[in-house]
Image (cartoon, helix red, strand yellow):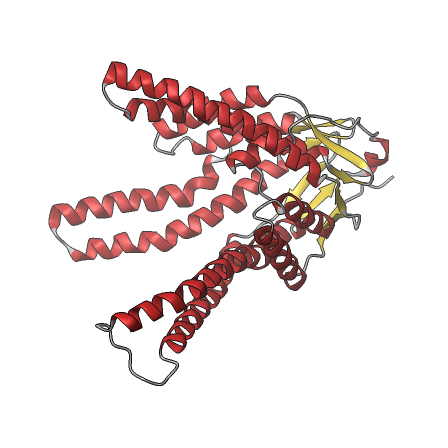
Length: 393
């Protein structure tokens, strides 16, 4: 039997995504944030259904009510932590160290493992509510194991000023991938310890050049070195895009699912183009909203055709009265449109690019994978929602 390759197609479109994000965002604002759980569910269902390995779409079957209840449980826990634990730390800091700096540092250190815990639990919930070909994905319990590993690896990355970030990325990805299942089949993340350092070369090079150029400019007072320093900015931007594309390629092609393997060819310049066009369009919209707001305020104040006098308290009071509601509306319009535009013009095109350049190889044995039991746990993405980390689309 010949080996089977499955291409991944992407059917999402910017227009429908923009409309969906605007509608769900407006409902979230009108319900004072309560609709966010339903909004996130609808957006995920759109993203998931647009990703079609072998022509068969992914399914997201998460329940918004699970998210809401999990959020309420997490808020109770976080209220206890912030209200009680921080109070104790503040008392100790003032009593022993005559200051509150130590309390803030200890509080941050105590919150860090909960953040990593929340990220892992959010990933577990998302995978547990994702299906393909009717088979569930899953992530084995291990949130606290991930949390302490993340603390160690992030500490190493910070201590080395980011130079060890490729190692941190690989180690944490291995932990998450090796706990991930599709049905009864376990994923395996391969790869040598130093395999991601090559992905960072276009970040390292401009950093070294920046240090050399800055040092030479300070030592010799030569403006030519400042020009070399400025050249490192576009190189660094390219380096970030190259890191994202090449690290994704190396990690993805080192993953295994039984006999199945993955091949992908993301392109750094495509990533840069998507971000550049997306942010340019967002900038145009925001500029237009600011101009409209300014015009409305001036029209409301000078509606009679007279000139505006900054020394006239009546006109200043009229400007404040007319401008306040207009600025409030513009603020919410910017908040709503920013969220929708980033989905339609950045997140969706990036997702489409990574999906369309990826394929599954040696997929003959897919039919032998059997269903796994539904993963039930109480708080869903509650901690990630409460901390606003790890619960993104």
